[in-house]
Image (cartoon, rainbow over all chains, first blue to last red; front, side, top):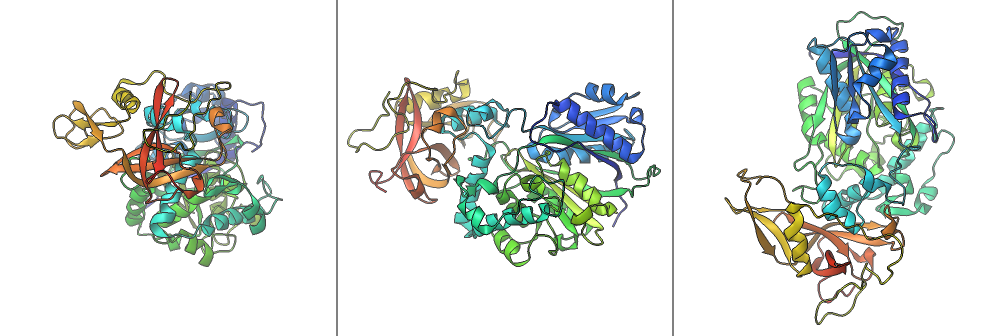
Length: 386
Length: 159
């Protein structure tokens, strides 16, 4: 295996809450400052920023961090896949020498700002890929939010593969079981039973209430430095082995995607695993973007943990909960910890690889993967080691 | 405005009701140029997609260029208005105020020609009947002087 591309020297998180008076800019820069403090780095020496989903401007970071010489900035647009893809932009920047200290922060006011789940049509005010398709061909029929798009995939998946819908429930229960080991999780003290899940209402079939993630306020950040950089803090550095992004064919429209089940992850995962000579069973944990239980099953399939249509069997037989072979979302994920745009999956992966995940710690964790997923199945992947 | 039914067809459930109060049904305003023939076609009870003028490839939804030959000239192509349900959504909660009083409602993505799929409301009696592989035909809904696409189960929409 070749050497690491970069390392993650600091992580920072704000409080994860439902209800805040803080702005997205305030949350993101607070998380960035905490990541610098964690790395024992003077924030003014940060020289690069990557801004997932372009939520704020580079100038906000210059001001809040007191950056002297910002020589690299970038933004991307992959919905829930943005945070992990943005980390890989930062990795490319430091690996090529364009910058030496790059902050990547994600999150915002998903609860206190515009809430996707509102019945008042708030979701139609969001901008999505293929926006003309959304306004002309979907909104008139009441198709307006991601959970409805992904139900199009789920219903086809059930039909085409004969998959067991009980896999959705198993993912929901596993997320709560993990959250019970993470005092910071929203659902830390609220375990979920199969009976409660079965009694919860359908929102869009086959998704019930507990198949759908939280909406949260908060931000999380990482500091990315070259693999050769000196270690500043007492924290163990976490190495970035590889990663990348992938886009399905017809990435801006599900209805006309030839294989409606296709995920961007199908393109990036074989590439990255092939280059590293790794297979899914090699990992000690996987933090898999979980806006909905269904997309966890599909990503497990396309990462190669099992075949297409076998996600439900995998979670039933091998398991993804605490103490399983490869635990998934040890922090509780978007389903049970908080929706921090998937950057909380990255910070949790770093904690695991430092051995600092508290009650959620996976014993001897040395290799982990993180995925992002969004905007009609864009995918991103990060492979981390200690 | 009442939803329209076609001649000889038993009246079935429609999403557009006589209730004119409350929020309007979402409709693109203005209709973008690339979609104009599609929406005017719906008022004539036709499904009109686009065809590359250079290589003849059918295209839906409309894009700047043909995905096969990169040509940017298109002509209208009227396709049969029946097909097979490729996938669907059954919505028990609405995220738009017009639909809030109409749950549960269903959406069908219907393949009418190889690779050409059209999204519309599923208007047969029980949304829970909707299934992949079901044969359906179009039922056009009149909405405020425009038309939208609905789908009903073949054979009179019996379910």
